[in-house]
Structure formats: C-alpha cells, structure tokens
Image (tube, rainbow, N blue to C red):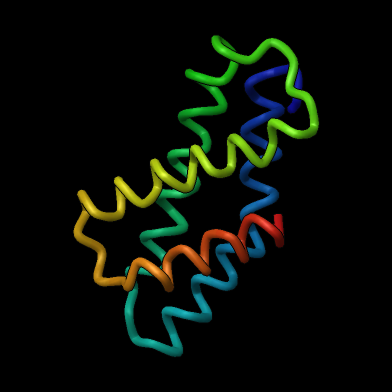
Length: 104
C-alpha cells in the first residue's frame, strides 16, 4: 500500500489499465457495454476505498491482507453491479474480477 492517498490512486489507475483493455475487448466481442461500466465501477470503488476508508482503518498492510481486501472489494463490487442492474452473469463478472485482479 502506498503511503499517500495520491500514490494509492496512481497505483490503482495504473493497475487497472489491463483490465480496462480486457473490458473493452469483451464489450466489442459481446456487444455488451456493461463490461466497461463494471471496470469503471471497479475503479471508482477502489479509488473511494483507497482515499476515504483504507487510510482510516489500515495503518500498515501486511502482504496477506491484500487478498482479504480483494475479497472485500469483490463483495462490494457485486453489490454495486446488482444495484446498477448490469446485464452480466454473476459468474462471468466474478471471473472477470479475478482475472483483472491477477493482471493488476
């Protein structure tokens, strides 16, 4: 975890570039723009957590906590995708999330 909020935002944006490219490719192949919306929600969720929540609750992030935070963000992303009524299968969105997380 970067020590400054702006560093966390830069890291988050840079790490999601491959995911954005994948979302664009999936949108073109399937004709469903919700893949791009999903990666956008993922980015906004991550930036919100990195700037407003994580600095308040995490002083030091041990390496094992990365996966715990990923599972937490995954749950929040599924809730937001449901609220936004994205036209995506849950299993497809889950696979997409973990592929993007691994690429990052």
